[in-house]
Length: 259
Image (tube, rainbow, N blue to C red; front, side):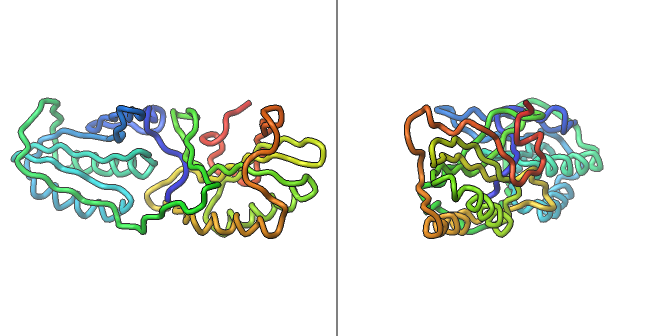
């Protein structure tokens, strides 16, 4: 799984600027759909452009390119429920191809005669085996960004908290996780913890994948080392709202709100 900074509901207006591509936002909920980047163009040499798009896709293996064609008219799109930086970088690279091919923008419907698709590299699909792991989004951060994270709620005696946090930091480094912060609430000799694990921006040349079940297995193993329980102890008065306390961080302005 890829964790980190993404866009879905809003366009990163201050980061990317396109001549041909439009951003089609996702809606979520009952209107569930992908967010997409879409360009409608006509070109002088369609086969030449197709060949270049196929070659380009080899550099962006975590994305797809869908191409709907009628003679010299193309509708080129890419999308997902999480548009990472690599998707926008792909659109930028396609735009450079379109400029070199003297493409002309148009916005009218056309009949689809054929279709080509370049699929993302097949990875091993991972069903999350650990019920204590939650995959969550965030509210909007810098440049309309959101963030995809792992959240784990747990509690343990305060005397073990520092050692637990140190072990969690070590596990993050082992499992390709570069952002770790937490909220807590101490009471008497116990504490509730709300743990967050994620990554920063995901670019095409350095996309970071996290093996969720490997990470989860190491977290579960800590229950043998510490009197650690998943979930929170007590009522809302003990909900862990103090924080965030940062252990590892990258691209902080896209992860945490400035206070």
